[in-house]
Image (cartoon, rainbow over all chains, first blue to last red; front, side, top):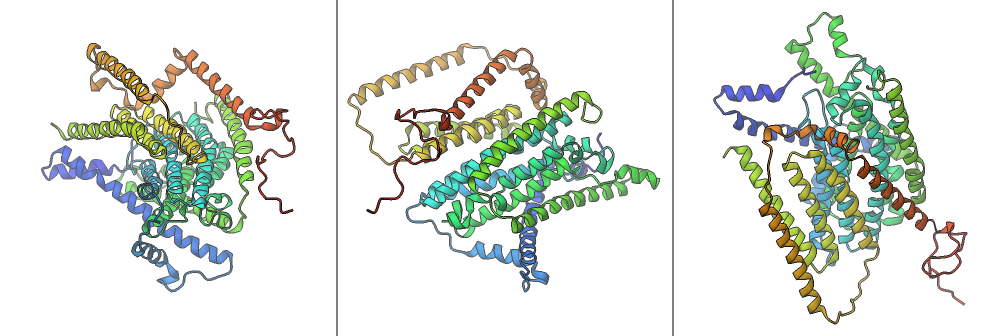
Length: 372
Length: 199
């Protein structure tokens, strides 16, 4: 099912028209989508930080940021600038190399995972065959960065925070991967593009959330735990551990952690919308609307229109989930460490295993509904 | 040379250099924490080599299993028992070093001999399955490699059950290390009292 805008093809054809070889055209093309996605991720973080400030203010009956731009929209940029010009401190007894490498190791896998996030049929950096598995593998690197920064800070709170963060993300990765596996079982493919296309049959009715309600909830809880959002923010629980593994960090290195956690939150929201909420699909299939209005689906104008609807839908669904995450953060109390581990190992793991088994059974029994 | 081949060559040289230097660092560095982190770097570079060989699924599995699980476990263990204590001097350290060096050199020469004598028949790049490899690996695991796969899974299950039995001290009537009867009321119990007695 190859349709939709192929920007890469048109761009390469345009450059070839200017007399360049196809290899050079490809090299000029390569950094463009990467830069675009990086900018999109950073802008997404700024928007999320502003939302977090405004929604938390509303939840606590405050006004929130008000003076930096209209409704305080420039506040996140001011925050970023402040962090950028702050002094970069490495504690005297800390391990300089590991102290610097830690935040980088936390941030880089998160940004790399944006490789597989599709905003449309051809609107992603690379449609790699292992798709969603790449994200699971990359997110398993993060605990090493957390342990590294916790250890290098030479501070007992940092070390405890790092150990907690690593333990938490390891234990929640298993139910997360199992609920992704149930989706993969239904799709017969690991590619994110195929996962979205599999859901696009009849709009909102064929979204995976109806076929995988348990998987959806398990995935969302685990994603929140992986992002260390509030019901599960034990690694940086202020009352117990000062700020966990971030305690000794200042300036740009702290900003890397901050950026990493928010990019991870947006990435998780995007992946939930791709896996369970139909990705870039409109609740009513665009093909049906085009047929109803008697418009050819392959006309250039319709193509541009559907592509923009795709981007808008992906971002809208993701930000709806980000909104829920922020609301959860400011309205729920923190769980205890034993409750956290109980929830992960004794509740989510068996439930996601049973979900996988039932999905496999249903796939054999009703292949037309659960992907033959 | 075309641009693709040049890129591949540069990637290969950088990755192999990182693997060799990192592996030497793992063995030779004094600080065990550095060794553990370098080991993670070596695993990552090996995953990069798999990626260069068009085996993306194996590369991702390498990252997930070796970096995400094995290496994290090693670092965890080091950080939980990172006591600064001087090791006892070993008497005949020199002869031990000579023996281990000679064993390593013998192994190396054996590997080099295998490399030189074996005929490496490479299929042409057009025949590589690339993205298909995930499906092929699955087919092999459930047909001709079924027995090793099942044996490995049973082994892992045994290890898991063993770990649970060791962790749940309340199922045993006496402590393994001390031989004393286990207090059944509290699972989390420190061996020394946390608060000093004031009177």
